[in-house]
Picture 1 (tube, rainbow, N blue to C red):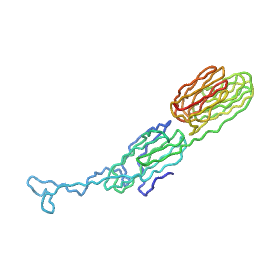
Picture 2 (spheres, rainbow, N blue to C red):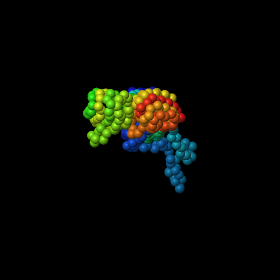
Picture 3 (cartoon, helix red, strand yellow):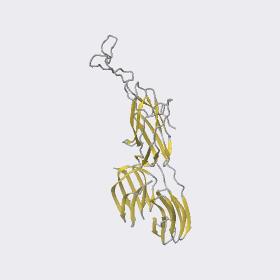
Picture 4 (cartoon, rainbow, N blue to C red):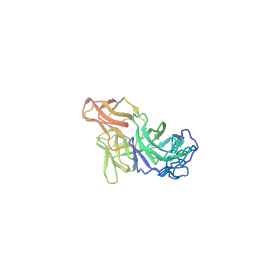
Length: 361
């Protein structure tokens, strides 16, 4: 657990809320009120006024309703409420969490002033290295007494995007290393038409690596329980390459149509890191790149020597859509723009030699 300048204090937790981090955007969901926490655990709404102050007033006949000072004159009321000042004592949090894993964190705040007061500050977050911070929560604690230390507890927080994530409240900052676990590849070999069962997809990017030595159709598809299929490969004759797509979570069968020997591996790539731009990719025939870290709008230059489709797309690790970069037929040489932010995999469908260069716009 990470800590910052830990000091002893009262460990009272407030009402919880749930934070969900989606696609790098921080969403506050299921929010409930955060009550004040006093030293005995009770909500406190005491006035800042000094209980010892004298507020007497004169009566119309100058009677006993007046308050007098030592010199026999009427007393004047003066209130000195003091000042509440606050210090973040510590933040207790896990240093490392996995994507999809629920976690919480606690912030301890001490009133170092000489009067009770209200603490209210915004918690901000960002992916490490990003320019802007996003508001993700607000810590509100009523009437913290002088010298009192109060613990504010977060709700359940979930990260869906791997990589470093930074949080801060005031001048206090902490960081999470959000890791990802890649499902084990599933490999199959055979000859001719075949159906392979028990393919479990956790949802998101799927890559099919395949080879075929036949002369007729070679088709590879994932089919779900409703018999709706997603076709990855549909060629005639020999094949040796890879193709990518985005698939919903669930159980599937692998359906193959072939007239020769074949080998197929189903992969679900996962990574929070990628090669930095600019990158140059080259190959011959269908292929899927290793992960690349994109930064928004960019420029792509492509070349293709084949006589059939030349299609280039960037696929995220999770989601429903990729970013189409090129969609051409036959020989091609040209340049275009694209828009993609985060780690992505470049999927190339081609029947000749090709190259793709990508750089920031």
